[in-house]
Amino acid sequence: MQTLNIPIFPLGATLFPDGMLALKIFEVRYLDMTKKCLRDNSPFGIVTIDQGAEIQVAGQRVEFSDVGTLATIIHFDAVQPSLFMLRCQGGQRFKVLQCELQANGLWRAEVELIEPDEIIPIPSELLPTADALTKIIRTIEDQGIEPDQRPIIQPYQLNDCAWVANRCAELLDLPPQQKQHLLTMQNPRLRLDLVQELLEEMGVFKEQK
Image (cartoon, rainbow, N blue to C red; front, side, top):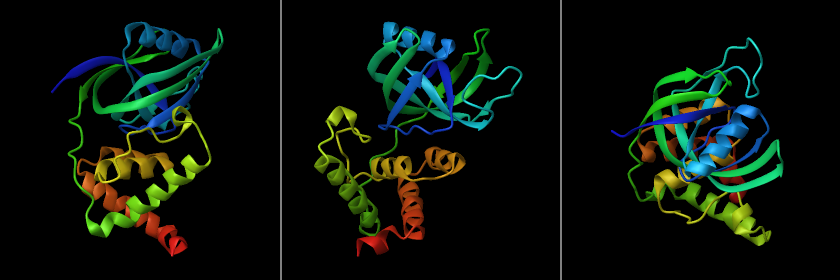
């Protein structure tokens, strides 16, 4: 399995493969990280915080999940010298093998890449979830939002279990730990099945009828 040494960005959010994440960067450690990633055309890692805060607090312990997602910067805007606005796209998942907190407060980690999800066509019993996501995408398109500003990045893969499950997981209002659980599931068919159960509990399909 391929390993990388990358900077790590612990967040209260979870990034999924092929997902989009908007970030406001203002801490020195992440400003420097952003400049280096742009210069080297290299990714950084997003991991979900288990304990602690996103913003560095002296003496506060930070713990994060050991499975995360590579993030590649696809749009960069230097609003001010000390304020960057980023749009990042999710790549492969990874498992943290070992990590180190550097003097500037930035985490770096040796990570092992996780094989991409197998492409599995959506079975008929899970089509309601794909249909619900299709309606959301059409609503976004009808609002006239430019493609590079939409929360879902093309190309759309509405017949793939992993892609549909991941997009729904991003959009659902779930606790971070629940989103992290979905991210770590190895079987995309089971991941989509769990997402559909969550949608059923929320009454989404009743509203569609």
